[in-house]
Length: 146
Image (tube, rainbow, N blue to C red; front, side):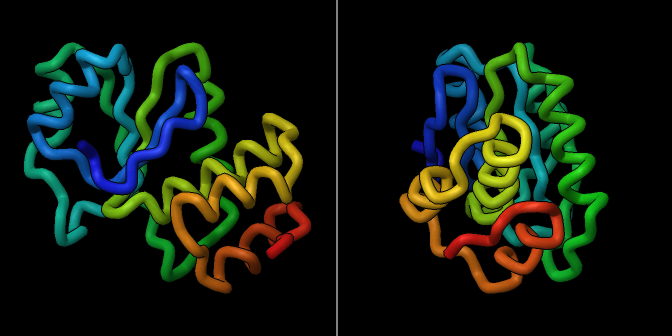
């Protein structure tokens, strides 16, 4: 089982870095897209992840996000990619499902118009965001509710 896995809906899940075997399981579970937001220097990065995902017949998207210096372009690009794949069954991951769950939280509030407090409850089921994320949430137009 993929570490820190969370199923948001029938068509969206997130988690930590999957292994090669877990990528095959994602395919069996009907996922069509693996969206990786980890940097290639992440300690648990899977070598040749793109080839392994594509071998399973899924689409692979890699948009590395460095969360030590969060900028508007990070969320804006994430949103654009998510909008482009919204009709697919998508698994979003980073090394430990920290960045991915924070960006999905933002997407749920800013695009899907989910109540921010309700979305934060979901986020807290996955992880406890660092303060920098609340600053970023506000910067991107959210209330930054804690």
